[in-house]
Every structure is written in C-alpha cells, then in structure tokens.
Length: 88
Image 1 (cartoon, rainbow, N blue to C red):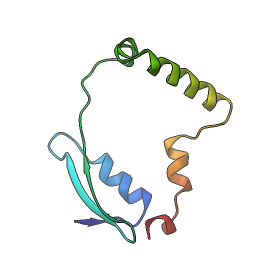
Image 2: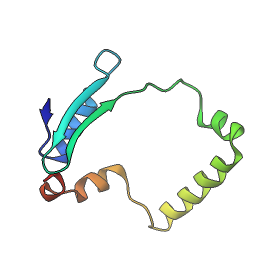
Image 3: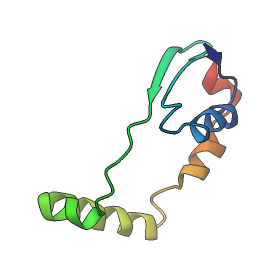
C-alpha cells in the first residue's frame, strides 16, 4: 500500500492509472486508507448525457456562469490550495 504525503504524489499515482493498472490503494496519514478505482467512461459525448437528463444542462450552464463570475476554481487551483497539513 502506498503512503501519500502530498497532493502532487497522489496526482502522480492517478496519472499512472490505465486499463491494466486501474486500482490503487493508498493511505493518507491521519485520514485513513483509500482504494481508488479507475472506471473508464464510454465514449459518448456530454450532449448525449444532457439529452437523457435535462437537469444536467441547467447544472452545466449554472456552473459555467459561476466560473465566469469567479465563483469556481480549477482542479489545478484546488490541488495548489492543499497543504501537507491536509494529509495528516
């Protein structure tokens, strides 16, 4: 089991996942043990999902507007905001 000490280390493990390496187990000191499973998406477009669920279109539109208004952050920004304390 891998012991994750930083968000960068976790992203390294996630980046290395693929069809053959689809499950990783790791621990975060002070939080516990985790099992991460890569579930490949079928290659349908988001448009197909929106047609199946009109509420999804509303959520996506609201999300884009909130991001444009500075109310959201990117995944990179989220990762940068994490510190070593978050993993203890």
